[in-house]
Length: 279
Image (cartoon, rainbow, N blue to C red; front, side, top):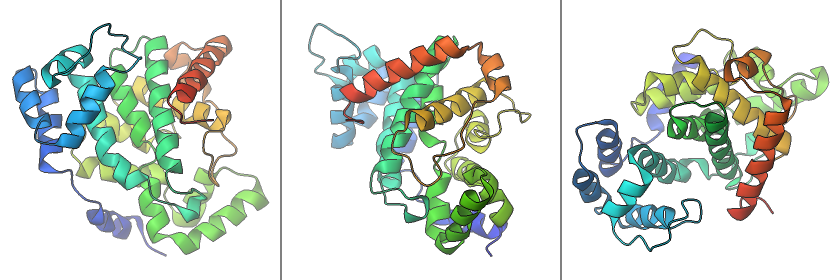
């Protein structure tokens, strides 16, 4: 059995962000950065340039005129939305793989993660959280640890699935019983390697444990609720898509009730249908 420490060392196999991506992330986090600084870096990557322009011209932003320059797109979207998009473009290559241990076909984890990111942003707005794009990133990356665990622990997952079936416990509980750790903890190690803020590291680590002592309980609560909603709606469920529920403490932290959850679910399904993430 591989220990957490050994697995963390293997996290070194996860690629670091390309220089351009790292530079854009740093610029968007720096209040002294200019739009020209960010435009210059984005233009160095043709695929990122296309994504930024496509996002700015999407129906979501409802702009009447055509956005044709990166600088105009950055003004419209804002620095944090640009950072979210850049991170999405980068991690999509990692999360789009088939994960047989979790029962995910190719692209399934990626599409589910996009759904969780969109849901987290909706929850953030409903809960009046001041950083909806930070919530988007937390939702997007909450299950990044599954990529590592699936790759290195394929055999152990047979035992985990058997335990889930035989003992009627959650996948996370079975991970912890058999491995001694869960995918959230590994995901947090990846986030640390990528030098993401500690708030995001904690949201990934504790998205199944929102009662944990953290520096930003609201972000953790948003990530937890987004994860549970995506599972309840049934978006690209893998082997771990059962036995999910909402933490009452998370709901209290966010000021959400059953009717608000229903509104969020309904809006999420509509958005996902428009984005062709569900049929």
